[in-house]
Image 1 (cartoon, rainbow, N blue to C red):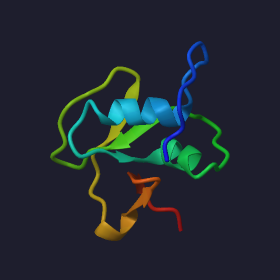
Image 2: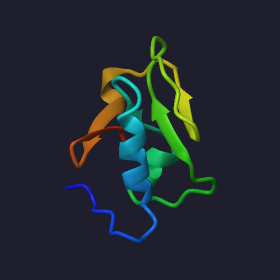
Image 3: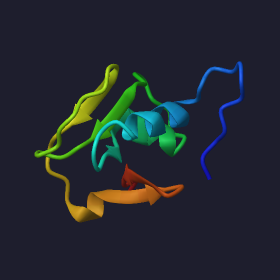
Length: 86
């Protein structure tokens, strides 16, 4: 279940990532954003999505990975596609 964003509170990283996902086709939460999704410590947090080598679109403030991922590299966290944690 996705966390709610309370009125007057700053949005959480998860809320920002899900919002960014709506702006690009078939995105996967990746990089530091995936680590934060799994509640792991991150040195340089930010919004990161994977869109694949044929991915298109851009979102201000979001870094997009376009490398190839193997099917086993993508899992689901709370129903959201996220690069797998192994």
